Image (tube, helix red, strand yellow):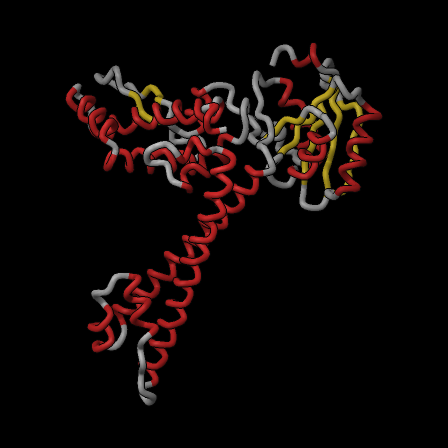
Length: 352
């Protein structure tokens, strides 16, 4: 960011907390602290922050560097962006707060501003609106799915350890048939152990049914939002509602990833050099980045491998060239990251 000191006069660093925001105004020429303040993390505090910035810097010569712009700093980031301010998300500090280990909210606010001066590039805060709605629904679906899986595992464990006659009746059933069979169980009074076991099974069966309906409802809501925001994703082979939602959430909005290689790096699909000893031409995929996005790409590739003829032909061709099936899938993930990025940045005109 060699041009930052020429384009701007001040960087406003913000260290947000649950109840308050610590703000520091830094002069870009000297990196000195011009002013500091603490405001509340509420609408009144956001207005105070904007007024404080207006007093100590000019509106067209400043940028906000907000730590945690997607969490505690989301409120101020949204208000500032709506007011026409330049906002940067400061999510990954590159070094320790201080050499001697000193740390405070005031120091962190200064650090958020000063580190921005030394960076060549920075990230815009993720989009709100429909993208944020998709993000929260996707997170809710994930927690419901995990809870349903846990309930299924608990129910299966009960079947394995229950009364021999009941076990023989239930152990070979699928989950759907198991839930139905448990609803129809009638146990005579008297056997306390058997009655308690059936009651526990019935409770778990009702929980599984409820969570299945909840996941279905969330899928329907996500499908409607994706159809409005990015229908081109759903038209891709192997891309379902959940995978499309994750791609949209990670991509956020046009221009956040400066090019397709940056998006591939975010997805953990960019090849990295992995040469060692006698092996001089080996690459591997990044283990960093957005792992949820990486998982979505992986699921799409696996689905295409099973039912998409061009993908099957590609893997066969790369295997014939000497690559392993795993290496061929890695190449597919890199291609898929490039393709989906271009679909998001430049959607087909007939789908918008």
